[in-house]
Length: 281
Ligand code: PAF
Image 1 (cartoon, protein in one colour):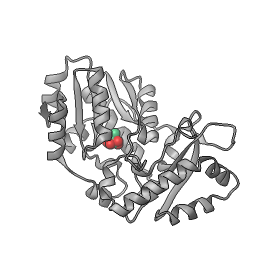
Image 2 (cartoon, rainbow, N blue to C red):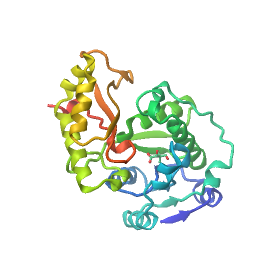
Image 3 (cartoon, protein in one colour):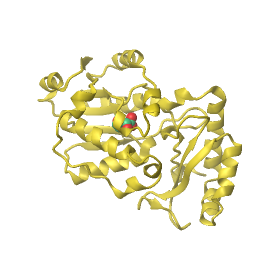
Image 4 (cartoon, rainbow, N blue to C red):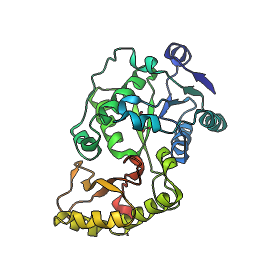
């Protein structure tokens, strides 16, 4: 595994490679990342992983500072799974150049997390676009766990006619059902148990939750979630995945999206429960 901290050296190494499979991460690698990397390895023998905690996608300095950092462990994991290249850019390496593409922010960025974390998605698209301009990968691997992020990045790539294919990767879950995320490291044992209970409640009551929201009784759902251990709920919505709009008719297939606090931990992707209809019995 070759490690690069600057894009000039990286480019010297990869500029002739035509099949780069790129997995962008913010480190604190877990089974979710590993499944993305394994998928990338199956497709290509030119796998490049980046680790960069992008300050521009955090809504508070505090949250950025508290984000888990585990670089030494991450390097060990990546060496073990045998990726080809690891890119560990500095802030300057990423941000001190003028990108060619214009950032395109799909309207989908205005709802759900976009409403509660106003500069988050622009920060994500900005950094991913810069990575794509530097690396020019053939494939980009992103998790369905962050469905809104994935969908917004896809729109940007299409709008700018970027020649990178985005590969959606399934959500990997803990034994208790909650999506695996670096931020889970911040939760206590008890909080993890509660997150599992919340997942189970939503999964088992998908239709009921829809009808409560549909009949203007969302507060009853929120009350129940608070009883189960949530501290504060930013949103809970049913989303029609085809239109990417809040679902307002029981006729359409929908997924439930939720973002909530547990303890003092900020609402982040680990709390987003995307529940494909087909998984519900
Ligand atoms: O999903 C993430 O970890 C980040 O948003 C990403 C895609 C690496 C951009 O910083």
